Length: 117
Length: 253
Image 1 (cartoon, rainbow over the protein chains, first blue to last red):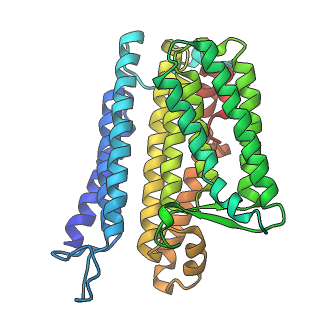
Image 2 (tube, chains in turn cyan, green):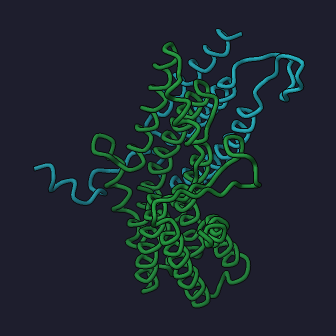
Image 3 (cartoon, each protein chain N blue to C red):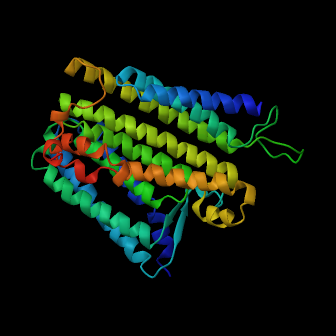
């Protein structure tokens, strides 16, 4: 189980990094979503992987750690909100500038040309 | 010592006051910019007053903690008041007041919710300075960042939108790294409370040292990206140049 979870996290992170390094907004958004999935699973597994155990200490031996589950819940909510925001931002950027490239043109950055000399 | 319990219950105030102010401004006085300005300045002055009171309360070097929900210390979330956090509170409130007075000169008309977003950002900043819990720090950081995204886009326009997309994307990546660091540190030590961490880190087994150091270095990397330290500062010129003037000084750093 450890191998499957670890390689799933690794694979998703690798795909996310590849997508985030693209030049257009849509792959970046998908990459950020994948990255947050990978991190949710990683956070979940930080309390050790235990199967079929209650998240409470009842004195009857083994239990699963409840804290990472609460952390993951919070992380999911936050990353969901952030994804919604960045989707709207990408969409409005596309509608207002008629292009979906993520980089800023050189002449839009003040001071860049002077400092290059 | 008689004023300590009073100061203890006031520790939560720097986070509650901006939250209530922002909520009132959104719910009640959405269109009335004059009313928003009065409320905004009054609330920031009150915040400065509270910060100075708290600064005075712990000026003898004592540390005070507010336990949220009265949960016992390493299990619940605590807000910690010491000389560093009160200094940062006073600095934040003072800077916020100056920025606000400048913004009132006309910048705040550029978008509808400038004052509400400004106070949500103050909520995040104050919370991040006060908290004594690693994950709670992440949550307050996110509160601050969400408000700063709104402020960054304040005024609108295609240039700001493009710079805003970069800013949000970079901060989302940094927040993801923050969560990896939290996961690593929790996985090794089993605690998120700063004071408890300080004790537990010393007892870490030799085999886990590398994981813990990776987590700590990732935290450093995250804060370096968010504060734009030199090798990681590439996002800052485009963002701050595109943001409206009163927004730049209070952006997360």
